[in-house]
Amino acid sequence: MEDIENMEEDEYGFSRNYFLAKELGGASKRSAHKLSDIHIVDEQELRETAIEMKHAKEISELMSDYKTMYSKWVFELRCGFGLLMYGFGSKKALIEDFASASLTEYSVIVINGYLPSVNLKQVLLALAELLSELLKCKRKSSGSLSKGQETFPSRSIDDILSFLHGPQSEDKDCFICLVVHNIDGPALRDPESQQTLARLASCSHIRIVASIDHVNSPLLWDKKMVHKQFNWLWHHVPTFAPYNVEGVFFPLVLAQGSTAQTAKTAAIVLQSLTPNAQNVFKILAEYQLSHPDEDGMPTDDLYSASRSRFFVSSQVTLNSHLTEFKDHELVKTKRNSDGQECLNIPLSSDALRQLLLDLNQ
Image 1 (cartoon, rainbow, N blue to C red):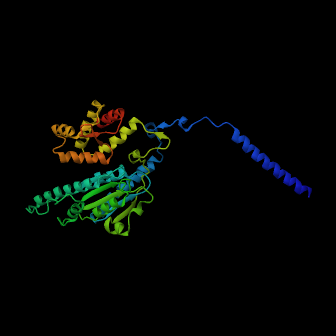
Image 2: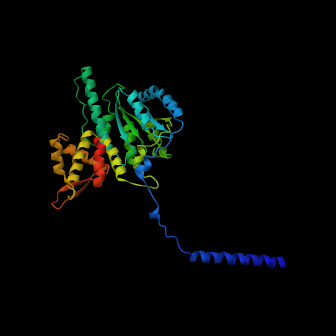
Image 3: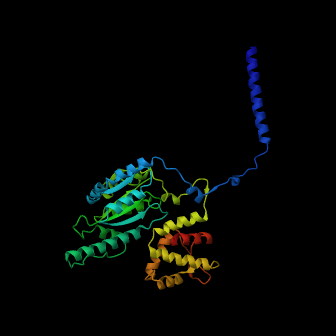
């Protein structure tokens, strides 16, 4: 009995001490430190931090093994399959090396799916124009005078896809190779984009070589898309290479953006565009730096300046470049006090100067 009373007393004492400690703890002073006091590393500095690459010899041997498979991959493309590369590490350099070494007999168009936005209609137009030129050359070399289907009739997506799928040539080697880095990228993950790519892959004159990195990428496609349209052959090709280019558009943990990093990101986007598009952007950037107090450069003035330097031949060409800029969020439009449509680059003056330096290197 006495033991039971002692145990109850101990438990009571423990409980009393616990709540007393909580009371005293609540009354103590709170820390004056704030989250904003934490020193955050500059993003550019963090990205440039040298990371020691291990197993360089083994990785080099692995790349050499992949190169022996290039001829097999070309054969698979000629047989009508699409190639899907997966595995740990960036596959950008591997696919580009394969294209430059083994696809020299074919026309190649590249889509950088890791970019924040991708204009698929522009890609389809480029493919159709390229195929049209290819067919013209083949007809000239064969002595055929037929011109019935040398050009595509309209610019709607359905008509362009019909043209790419049409029986303009019986030569099974008459195809264009479309390289898609990160077909599972943020700009291509929506169902509409994937359906368009699947229809494109099923065209008789198109072959696709693509890469994926997201663990759930196969969920983007149904059975018909995988086996009938894309007609994938899956290749496990881990490279263990860092995602230096692909990762530029994703913010780093405990890092803050800098002028240099902002400029570098914009430069990578611009370098994926045509030289004329880059030159048009330079005109706009130079105008914005020399007129900092204005709302932007009037569209008509940009057209006049670009045409006088032979960067564009018509308003349609300029509009095409501006669509690319807007899709990649490089340019925004607003109306000034006179009602004119003005174009503005949403970057600080320092970032804009750094961007022009990067483009001129």
